[in-house]
Image 1 (cartoon, rainbow, N blue to C red):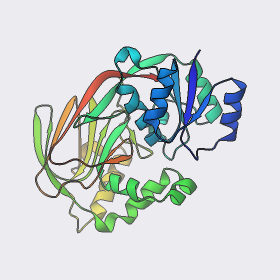
Image 2: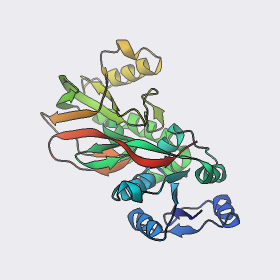
Image 3: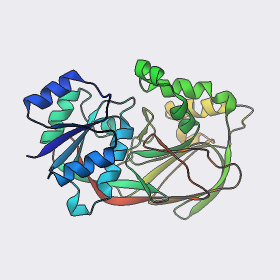
Length: 287
């Protein structure tokens, strides 16, 4: 089987590289995942395995999605990032060597992909406090604490909490809300947290999770809402809004979101966001 293992420069994992050599799996180090994927496909790769975090996986998946369906080799993941949300959500081993073997042995499954104004994401979209925490968490903190770094950074940003008045249309429902935190999940796991455990990569839908109508002068109410969610009382939480649909529309009525994260990678969009699902778009190697 023609398999290539793709890494970005600076990615280090001696056991993984040793196992790849033992299995005669070519290792390609390339800064641009789009170039690495294009070269792998041109070389006839039957499987493309990416070692890295959610951002690296994001760019590799986007490169595959540029190709016609019959020209998309299955994507495997060796999780080496901070949160490794997608790899965790699909049940991949955390051990890099075991994850490599899973990528070589698993059967591909065609999974859904999300799109925000046409830009693809595999795992999820985040905006508001969560996106700020991801952007501002330092590399040293992420290296030391993993996904906990996002939680600590989010707590540090509570004093600067912004809300974004918006119209959200989900299916046939439209609601005006002040958004403090917005996530639209494909896998259900974002920032190291299982926001929507029932979410599925195969259901033809996306799951919206939002913290709404928080007074910026009382950021503690956001923590209270999240604590209520964590304790399993989310159905009664007046500041939590959840909805499952194939398409969402978020129209800003005031200050727009500064940054929208797609799979943890920052993007900027002007005006209204249209988020929809692209069913069965990506062949993914999962256990």
